[in-house]
Amino acid sequence: LKAVILIGGPQKGTRFRPLSFEVPKPLFPVAGVPMVQHHIEACAKVPGMKEILLMGFYQPHEALSRFLVSAQQEFRIPIRYLQEYAALGTGGGIYHFRDQILSGGPEAFFVLNADVCSEFPLQEMLDFRQRHGDAHSFVMLGTTVSSGPGCGRRCRLPAAPAPPLLLSPQANRTQALNYGCIVANADTHEVQEGSWAPRWGAGPGTGLCLVLAPLLHLQVLHYVEKPSTFVSEIINCGIYLFTPAIFQHIGDVFQRNQQELVLEENSNGWQRAEVIRLEQDVFTALAGSGKLFVYKTDGFWSQIKSAG
Picture (tube, rainbow, N blue to C red):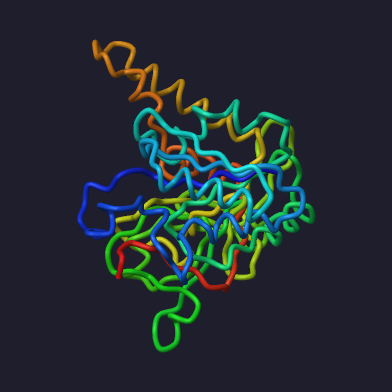
C-alpha cells in the first residue's frame, strides 16, 4: 500500500494571509499540529502502508523539508515530496509521477486532498474493497451532511464553493451545488454519472477506486462537479482508494487531450495535455460503468478553506 497526499501549491488568493507569507498552507496548524500531519498519521496507521508521497507545486521550502524529516522519524515510514513542474490538476500530478507511485508494486494506493479534515476511515475503505470488490474496481469516499442544529458535529460545509471530494457527505439542496455530487445505486453500490457512491467493478483491466459515503456501500451511477441544478445530497469528500489500473483511465484522458491539441501551434501544449482533473475528467467518465463505487460514512468531515 501507498498513499498520495495532494498539497497543491502557492495560493493566489488572500484567505490564508498573512499566514501564507510564512508557511505553506499544508503546514498551517490544525488542532496543534500541521494540517497535513493528520493525513500522514491516518495513513501511517494502516497496516501494510509502505510509503507516503506528498505531491504539489510548491518550490523547495525549508519548513516543508524540516517537517518531512520530523514526520519520517515520528511515524517511522518513508515520506517524500514530489514537486510538479506546474499545477497539473488532481489527476495530472499522479499520472506524471505514476512510475514513482507504482515503484515497489503496490496493490493499491490512497489519494487524499490535503485541504480536508476528517476521521479518515482508510481501513474501513480497504475492508470494503476486500468484501465487495476485486483488484480492478475503484472506490470513492462520500458522505451526506444534514443541515440544521448539530450538523457541525459531524460535517462542516462552507458557504463558498468547495473543491471536489470523494469522501461524500450529504448536503442540503443548496449546499450540494458547491460540491461534486454523486448519484448512487443503493442496490448495486455503483456510482452513477453525476454522483458518488461506493462500488466495485468486476473484470480485469478496469481499476479500483473507493469513495466514502454515510455508512452505505453504493455503486456510482452519475457524477457532476458543482452542478448548476440539484443532483444529489451525497457529495464527494476528496479521499479515494485506487488500484494501479486507474492509470489506464487517466492515460485515456491524457491521450484525448493530446489529440485535441495536436493541431494547435502552442509551445505549452504538452503541459496543457497533462492537466487532468480526477473529478471532471475521470470520475464523470467512470460513473455508470460498473467500475466506480462509493463508501459512505457519517463520520466527521470538513473542508479547510480559510485560516479562521
